[in-house]
Each structure stands twice: as C-alpha cells, then as structure tokens.
Length: 77
Image (cartoon, rainbow, N blue to C red; front, side, top):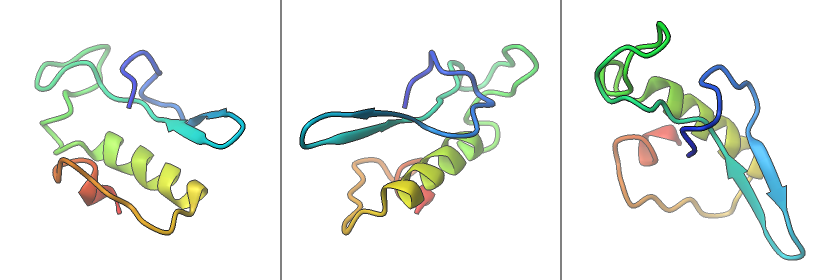
C-alpha cells in the first residue's frame, strides 16, 4: 500500500523483476479526516484499501495469502 498513489486508481501499479512481482495499491493518507473530499480510511473501515488489495490479489492469483493485520489485509480476501 502506498499513500502517494491516487485513491481513485483502478488498477495496481506492478513492479516486475527477475523472480518477483510486487503490486502497489493506494492507501489514503488520513485515518479520520477528509482529504480532498475523500473520507479517512477508518471511517469506512478501509473500504478503498480492501477493494484495491482484493483486485491485486485476484490479478496475482497466489497460492497462499498471508496477512499480518486483519483489518485491511486479511479482510481483502
């Protein structure tokens, strides 16, 4: 997740190397306050972030998904 990406980004940014592929998805900068008319991520329980992560997971089609934090990462699947 990258807060420098625009919140309305429809597809993840993908970095590809010899033996890896990394998917970057947007993350809102603020937890509660509005920024540019977009609500903070906690106000809708990370909806934008979860949807972006879900899209990246579908595109990556991994065998295993592991999440350290349940609120946005594990709920995306």
